[in-house]
Amino acid sequence: GMTCASCAGRIERALGALPGVRHVAVNLATESAVVSGAPPPALRDAVAAVEGAGYAVPTSETELATEGMTCA
Figure (tube, rainbow, N blue to C red):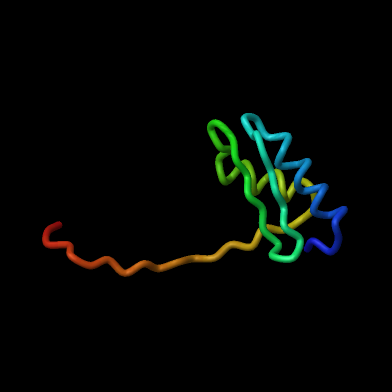
């Protein structure tokens, strides 16, 4: 839902307000954010911050194949 640099800035401020966050970089073109901190915020807290700023966070499910397992 980001449409301009102002949107990206709003999300950066929302994520930057989370406890422990040291750096936030939001990329408007890729609609992504990189958050770093010590410790980094929990994913659910970051999602809540973005949603609280008025934006949606898409979710997806990934299935991974596992090879080489030999026992239960």
